[in-house]
Image 1 (cartoon, rainbow, N blue to C red):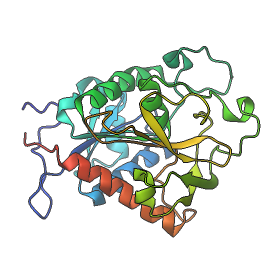
Image 2 (cartoon, rainbow, N blue to C red):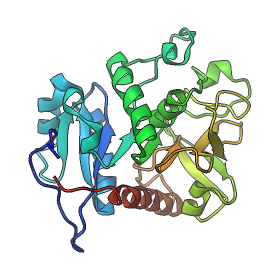
Image 3 (cartoon, rainbow, N blue to C red):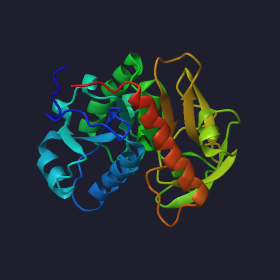
Image 4 (cartoon, rainbow, N blue to C red):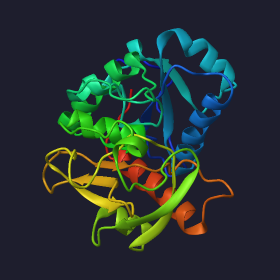
Length: 278
């Protein structure tokens, strides 16, 4: 296989197994706090035995490499040089709002912050990964992108459009109820856990969820916090969470931290089964 994203051969872990190359989509900010947020994803994947591949807008790749300190354990590449066959897994990461045009609506709120280039890159990439059985993990915006890619719609602004909603925006924390027997509930090891929350778009239980998936975690106000595919719906691993498992600082509980580490390890394990030599 011609490996276009990087010329290094795939790395091996201590057991001699190939480390899966897991793509992480990112947006158009690479300086200051935004790139530090990207580093959280990288640092969550490395202990799970994966090689992170940061997927960056083409013109910002040099700045991203410099901001990340030219880390030898991370690959940084551009949207235009990325090919799904070069990846063993895909993380649709957090970031800006998805343009409502992508799910058949017109913008109805001035609070939207849209990155059209990222939408145009992620949407077909997500659909292709789902079709080809490449493991996909959606996080926050990525949860929403997966829902849109599968034919669902979003609440454009929860605070102004969803009467009775709780706080979901930057830095909020709230309880999440998990569907017993679901994959995410097994990862948590409990039916209820407190998560972080950094979003204002979302999906309501009563409307908007894409066909072919099941809501498996819920906020107290009915906002969907995780979904999984119906049995046999896709050939590969698919999981979407509305919270940020990569963000594990002093504000997060030991239970949340443990679940988050297990989530990334579980995803990397699914990707490892597809890891291939160059």
